[in-house]
Image (cartoon, rainbow, N blue to C red):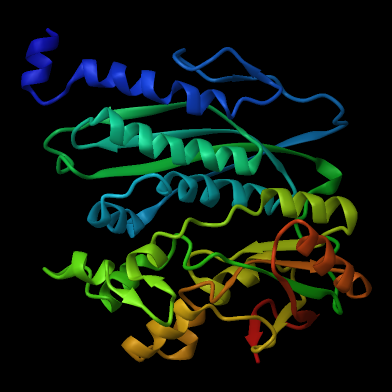
Length: 344
């Protein structure tokens, strides 16, 4: 049966080898609460004690067309961090601590070493987020994906005390908005990115390996920079300063994501020039002559997270984030008005 399955394009033995290669990377993510190891039919995790009214917070996402850059560069060791980041950052926006993560990897052909490289990135992301990789699935799908391509998605569950959920209930006019720097484009807007750099054409690989003086690295290195994981700095900020509401700046940029953090009757005012816009955004806007509003409606523009805190604690919030290794800026405030955002 296995030989017949192999002739159909699915190599069961390669699947076994993939599991063997990833075991050590998965094991390094195990934290208190993990029950058992990988290989079972379900990932088991014991809920932590000490919560009076615990609420589970879940998030799921994929990497999107950023994967195309990994294919073109044949570099797969960081794309897993992107997958973890997109899920755990969303979970952390509710004030939750991510507990565990599962990934789903669908491949055209199972190359065990490549699978191990991808999963290593997932495990690295889980370590940065402080959560456990308790399981996953690698599906070999010949004829559905080209043999050198794959898709990657994930799912995370976190926990928060119900009274401490950062859902905007404590937000008020006058709150300061703190922007936490991004590492680059992160994992959104890559359909436009590929168009800007003409990465769908015959010269895509040459373009990706072209060094840019403005970036201080090759185009490909910049575009594959992994998404920053904000979990630990956010939890630190919640503990030491307090957060009223949070927005993860993903697809839709500022224009779509900032209003999601606001209760009725509050509006965000963000002041341009209060943070460092990363060179990659200026370069893309220049190359494609993109209107400024479209840039803010597509990309994070150098700010991956925005949090609202008491106005009098804004400077303390910046210091706490800087002590946690982040660049942070006071970028605006909340005012009374219709829910939305003004970029001034």
